[in-house]
Length: 333
Image (cartoon, rainbow, N blue to C red; front, side, top):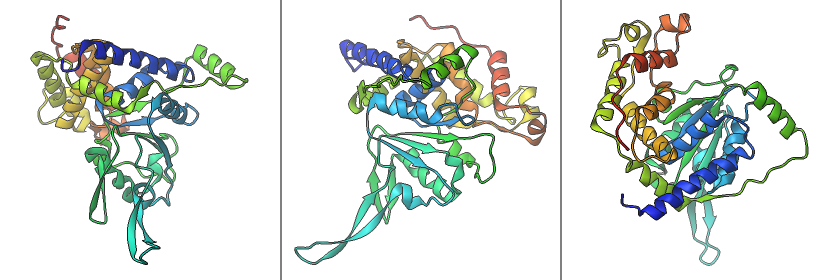
């Protein structure tokens, strides 16, 4: 690997510290925290979905506190305009010369970590303003292109049960999210701990343990994680099996309208590499692919009307494919 071994071990140690800092505040939800960190390591963005009160915003804020990075929260509302998040030009005057000029005033999108809270509450015009930032890590305003700070990480949240006054995200924008993470209710034991910790005087302090350059080093290291040719073919087979016109799976032909595109395969390999590194391994194994397949494919498989009527979900399709498609042998580490 290009990064020396001592640096690798130091960076992996920082990952363990990062998780411990988050766990000071967040009780349980280990899989959710892991998927968020995998998204960060892979250099992508994630969409968090859960009913109110499941600590989606708290989870993102705690992550930002454990990272030595700039953080901005954008509360998405129906009257939010693209300039409210991108920025706008303001007219200024040079008092020495009297010359007037336009200066670009950067919006809240110019931060390392951006919480897009309740993203589905703003109209498509404002939602689409995120597309260039998410894909190109830059924004264009008034014919000028402005680079965003790196690392750049968008965490968007949405509420699945209250649809009044919401604007569903278009498929093109959903596809820009590396992972679509669903947050469920805590277990009985976890809920008891949450109630105990949040109704008293306990206020744990979260300290930053990883900085921007270290995150960028980790993102570079993720791409150096090994994946065998058989594993790549396995991912390609899974992705192609989600498409009704290229699959031999009758389950897919019956329930799926559109399958996942090549970007899904890229996302699955990259997040599997990130998960392997998170587990302190330097090679991808089938368990990495299986773990990441659900959040990668959840928003990239479009179900048909029959499936919606029968409450058949994309997660069920993914589960069938992972069961039916033969996995390759685990590589020797």
